[in-house]
Length: 196
Image 1 (cartoon, rainbow, N blue to C red):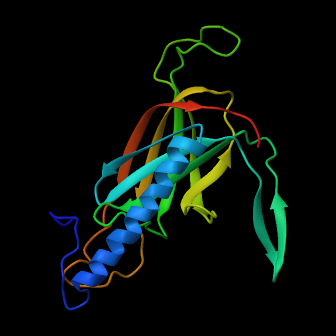
Image 2 (image 1 turned 180 degrees about the vertical axis):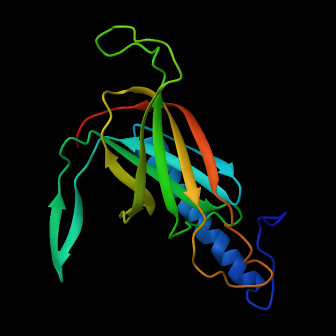
């Protein structure tokens, strides 16, 4: 990763274009903050490598899939009871980064009380996933996500992996970014299960 995540003027990009990308990124982050802190059950962000990574958790929800030319089907959740969302943004200008392979695993401490109040055996924790999180178009904020199934609501750690995207990068001065796999853990996520 470049020492400075901020983009620099070059033969490929001038100061005006750099400022436009920052303005776009700030607007995107405003939408991310609203999703994570107001709309979702739980959410947050952190910096890692070349990225700002964020998450949001909601109940499983229906989504449209393209069934054919101009034809859509509403894909309702079956046994899925949790919707995971992950945001991947450039750490310098804060814009959404597309075409990433993103996965998430939820881990629950097996010593935690179950909803029935019974204590389970202590150990390293029970893991659910990894879940592949595809790109999801959203009217408010682009993100990666999926409906998944977990045994019950409660407190989980969420381990997120972002693999380097394979798209070409413009600019000899600024293009050497997004080259390494990044792994982060969002601790003590409050998972609320159900279907929206």
